[in-house]
Amino acid sequence: MTTFLIIVALVVVMGVVFYNRLVTLRNNVRNAWKQIDVQLKRRYDLIPNLVESVKDSMEYEQETLRMVVEARNRAVSAETPAQISAAEQMLAPAMGKLFAVMEAYPQLKAQDNIARMMEELTGTENKIAFARQYYNDSVMRMNNAVETVPTNFVAKAFNFKAEEYFEVPEVEKEAIKVNLR
Amino acid sequence: MADKKFFRNPWEKNNPAHSDNVSEFDNPWQKRDASSMHDPQFNALTEQFQTRSDNEYALPPVERLDFFEAMRRNQRNTWILIAMMLFLTASFGYVLGWAWDFTFGGLMAAGMQYSTQQHVDWMRLILTPSRSGFMVGSSLFAAMSVWTLVTLWRADKMVLSMTDAVDAPASMAQLHNVVEEISIAAGVPKPRVVIVPTHVPNAFATGLRQDKAIIGVTEGLLQRLNRRELQNVVAHEMGHIMNGDMRYATILAVMSGVLVFVAQLLLNARGFLYMGSHGGSRNRGGNALLMVVLVVVFILAAIIVPLLARLIQMAISRQREYLADATAVQLTRDPGGMIAALQKIADLQEPAPQMKEALEPLFIMTPAKMWQNSNRAWFSTHPPLQKRIERLKALE
Image 1 (cartoon, chains in turn purple, cyan):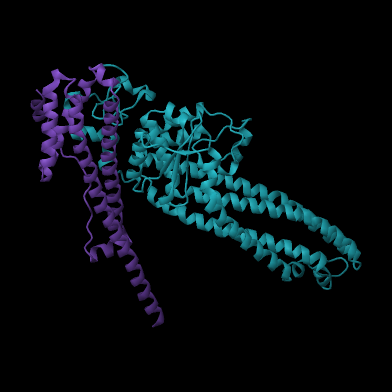
Image 2 (cartoon, helix red, strand yellow):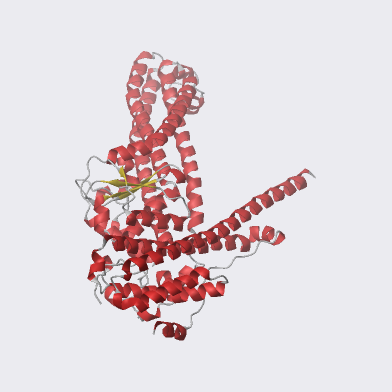
């Protein structure tokens, strides 16, 4: 009788431990997802500054600058995930073209504030990438817990689900090409 | 297209011209596979993020070593090590006290009662509980615990004052950005950043808790390394912080020091044994044999144990370095950059004779000693450069 009670007590304790671990992991995943948004917002705030600074010097590249601003505005106002990814797909090539074009303007390279802004943009892009990486790592840990044997019983009992990885959808390459022409 | 860009273009695609010149490599998104040619006009989001680590970025491969589990294990190992070392010290203290009892407390005389002329009853002799033994053992235990705690508390200030480190000003945007990026990837709060004013490239991490951590880089490092390599060096140091290596190294050093101290005491204690042997008048024959054996055992213990403690300390330190390298790769997903950074730093090392050896594990590369030969490999805090690069290549 006592051994039975001991076993039951052990099972209950382990159940509590596993439940707490699952809750912690799920909260990590949610926090990591929000962190990505924080970094994205930073990037959207930096782009208008850059455009303002280079506008006067790059008089022949107005089209490129206009595209960058438009892409950025679309990204900021996007709501559904589909809109967000469409806006991102427009923004990245536009920024790439802008960077490539800036190489041709030597007076820009000498300006200190432009260099600092480029460093900020690089840093922000890196932070977005690392935030997404950390989100994926958190999702991996959560999925490990939900799917491996001891914890998956508790997960099923309390309805913990495996989370989705951050993946980038496939891109319509024709559409991008049209945008840049 | 110019080879070296002034502006680091994060949206620039893989340019084959950059692929074999690792040190020119500033663009964090131009990564390893130089074979794939991309049209710069086609900067789709998929390609932009896939170049960082191909599919590993979106979907981690299943057969990878679980670094998170390894880190949890490390933290557990720290406590196990502390327990083992405390027990070892207490035992040594007990032996010392027993020796005292043996010569002055009449323990030998009491033990001799159970012996005949030819045969010495070892077991009885050794197993007779010695009150002085317990006293000395427990006081050493207490002393070592206190000393460990105090050292841990003061270790930060020690490292900072020893290296003349100053806080990095906010104007050093690249350094602060890199540290912030890596702390995002690690999921820890951003540590304090300090700069050491020397031209030798090196980096260290210190701090006993993750939220009180400090990362230091030398001015030489900032001058020589590009952004990608700096990222990897900072990731290595962040790995040390995440694995609690500072705490580990300090505890190891303190305990090693106490063991050496006790061994010295033992060596000196054998003088007492000689005195005791002249004092005891009964049973001269068995007495002399006993004394000789005891003295030999004490001397062996006093010499071998500190040596063993040191070897273990160094071996553990090297394992921690490998783990920090692996953690760095886990954070940046970029082994090539880590290899390039290590090679650059190793090439430019200079002797640093004022470096305290106990603090060496905190740095990314051993400050070079005046004489370097392979016999020192057993006593080196860091693994050889070639081995580190081999292991990193295996992760690619």
